Length: 440
Image 1 (cartoon, rainbow, N blue to C red):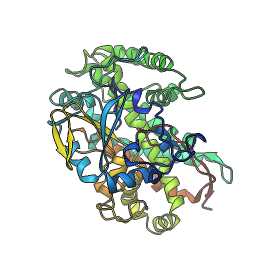
Image 2: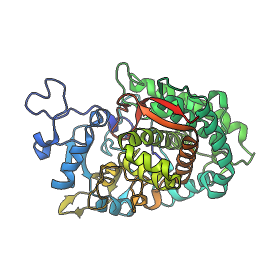
Image 3: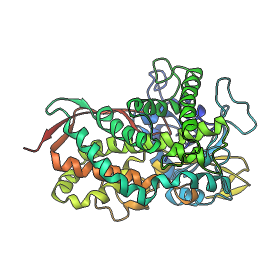
Image 4: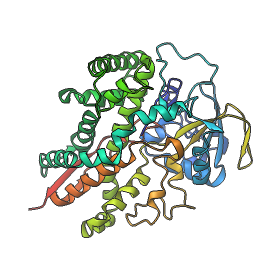
């Protein structure tokens, strides 16, 4: 599940000037990681992910500088952790590495926020005890009993969406399948008016969009205005449900002892946390599963031959895709990691996308192997108290999707390289053209 906080929504994906190497800068190209001085590598650039060039940058950092230092005027000092063991160590140690200063790369603590930014907060960007009591309020939505109750509905909707897909005609898998299925699920979790469900997709996209001409949002002010529309809509739902207990997320927040009196910006922050977490991660893994099994057709053939491998395939795709590239912590005190001196207040970026490709943990880590023995040890859901609350729901949706795909389709063929999200945080797809052939 994704995370939102007040001091990091903009600098997380603010355009970062890539270092140049022999003419690359003048042509607007991203240089090879091996053409740069090690100190100049800046893994936070969203262009690395949109252009799918991130792999060699993290490969070099894992090999040569697994605790890598950068400093910028906007974000101050930050370290990139790229090896599996270091990431897991920091992720499980909330006493020494706090979430309360933000969970994406942000402004220094004493810096003023740019005009137009909202001062949001969420329970996931907190440490115990605040984190624990607020998370507990909504955790029931993804509890095993509730998931069992939703399984038939998920399967019915999945079948309906797949049955309506055109055959031998190119369409966008991202919008037609991945977004549609996850948005319907979100509407159910919030008990949100079904006819307005695409508003949830829009608010999810806006939350971490890089403001740019022609982009999802063109300015910080546009993002603020659209997120305030989100708040106004959910305020109406909250008022309607106060005093009426329910199993949906709005009712839980409206009636929970520790959440019913949340101030507006905290309420909005937690809504965006739940929207992004329930939308971006699952939808991008759905798209990544189709793309990945096209890249490794022998794995798709193996799955067709033995559908019993679907649960293992789901875990492996979540590892390979890594829908959230990193999470941030902040050092509570001076410390040392691999001989590097971390100062109190330094930001640490735990690059899940790199740890999931660590060859010391995952053999042939760049390959999809649906029989990988340790696929479930992936970092994508995090570890410790902040482990993704909705991980079982995400796995269930993906499992059902592929069970229903294998019943219906002979092939799903990707027609061109996907268009990817301009983000160093949400690692996803904006367009994936495919054609299907049905079983007859």
